[in-house]
Image (cartoon, rainbow, N blue to C red; front, top):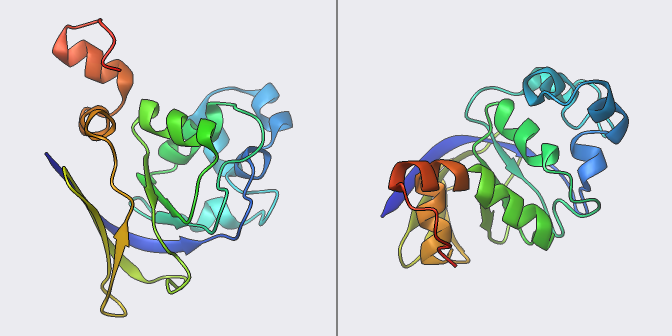
Length: 171
């Protein structure tokens, strides 16, 4: 099983919490991620959402997705056209919510990636590789478990079960 993505790097820092991704107050106004996507990262940069292009990849430091366990912090990223987040580390709940919703959480060293770099992400059964095409650098990533990769290849946990017609636990 193999998943490949390419996209432009959009840089963020360390400790990006779920309220930075999408403010809790915005979520209360309207829970629809396609409405909320215009407020993606508005706490950090009110113009950020307007600069996102379909296929961009978020790149962060350590502890991405810390804070509350609100699932909309994942679904709003997906609704923005972003299919993967590369980070040095993820908060456990965000990481699991990402896989369950079909957002790829790729753990790797991100310090050499710069804003706008063109990245090629390759997820396979044995490894995760990130190629910074702009700089000619390959970054090894932390491998995903087989079941995580399978769930992601189906687009998330609900689709995984729907397509398999199997509602027994894979874990």
